[in-house]
Structure formats: C-alpha cells, structure tokens
Length: 157
Image (tube, rainbow, N blue to C red):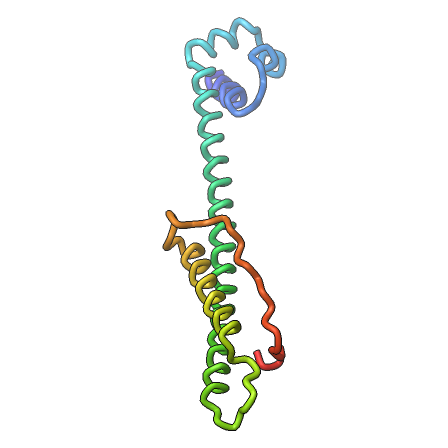
C-alpha cells in the first residue's frame, strides 16, 4: 500500500486536482487522503513543484527571447556590413572620378553626395555598434534618415 500512496502523492503534486478528487479517483476516503497530505506535506510539495515548473518555463521563454535578439542583431550587423561595402564602393567611385583627368563633368563626385555617403557610413557604424552592444548607454530609438542619391546607376553599385 506504501507504493500506492507514493503514486497518489505524485499524481496530486503534478496535476491540478483537489484532495477530494484524488480520494474519488483512487476510491479511498477523504480522511485518509487528508491524513497523508498533512503528514507528508503534499501542499508544500505541490507549491514547490509548481514553482520549479514556473521557473523552467521562464528560463525557456528567456532563452527563446535571447535567441531571437541574437539572430536579429546578427542580421542587422550583416546588413550594416553590406551598407558599409556600398558606401566604400561609392567612395572609390568618387575618388576615381575626381582623379580622372578625362572626365570633364563630374557625375557623382560632389559635396552633397559625399556628405550623404559620409552620413550613411556614420549611421551604419552607429547601427553596427548598437547591434554588437558596444554603445549600450548611447543607444537610440531613432531610425536613420534615408535619402536617395540621384544620378547613380544601380548597375554600378
């Protein structure tokens, strides 16, 4: 009969069920169930088990949130890297255009576009530092300003 009480106690601890329902389920008296419950502290064990389960659930949820944030930061960092490569290509194009004696009319290399590229680089660097948690205290919820550079052929990028 001892093994039956262990089974009954474990069932009570791991299920949302009242002592009366346990008595009914196992066809025993409510008094006997109450006696074992009191002596073996089933209620405290059930609370402890419930707390343990809640802690495990919280840990799993936290792990999933952390995994999503890590994946988002990795994606953001990848995108910032691509943006910096585009900005570097544009700077190289500007340099080539500025140093090419044959080009009379400058297509891309002007102060406005250079300022735009430099701001894009600064925004990408700031975003990268945030994605890598380098500048936690300076993080900002502002979205970077997006401007279109006129006169650029997308095939050149």
